[in-house]
Image (cartoon, rainbow, N blue to C red; front, side, top):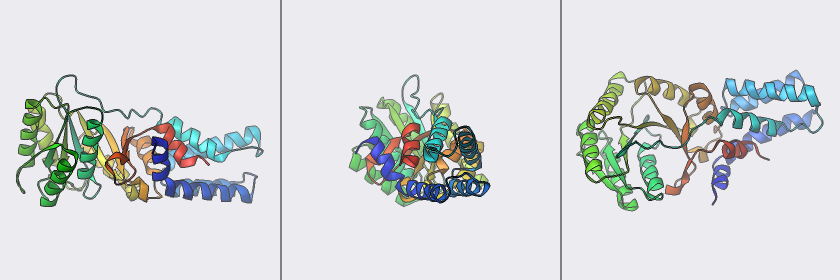
Length: 303
């Protein structure tokens, strides 16, 4: 399946809900009234596109209507163009370190799919002929250590792990040492899920980053927050709080294939200016894909 087909399949629920609503509004009355504009606004907000993006799309629709009238006006094309324009500054590529191993810390709240995402990222770079290592730094859950070891065995990727309850920063330290000794291109650190409101857990994450930063200058080179696409705008609060605690370099949005709230990707990128690096569009290792603004906008709004 090509990348666009994956985007389209993954965003099918969001696309269906959005296009159905907009078509319903427009078909009922080709004239753009205050009432129909308000309904379009509601449809966009319901898809979690956020207030700023919704306002931008509605303004573009009004402007197009005023200059060319209702004849041939394609509301979906206008929305697609505005979203693509808004997301076009998105730099999805992972920036490799100037020298040696690139260390990538994967952070987020519980249940967003961090462990699976870490493994899928390792698989993605493996497919690009890079040497990769995984670090099991979620030492709070024995299941997380087992899960990442299973992924490691499945993908033939070495996993650096400690025992359940071990100090996560020590495991991260050992993982960086191992990555340097093996001249690995990438090290992916799977950190424990933590609520963005728990100050002590955020301090632990800061400690982990300090430890690896002392060991390898500039590490972690990327701090990627994993967000569950199904949580809609609550993900925006998570992103705000994590960004305050540990400066993020980008976002990974998972589980977009099971939600009608795919618009939250746009809302978060617009408010925080953080690039969306990857999006998760299914269960398989290949279903984590680099974010592409044009294809994302097409998959959301193309008829």
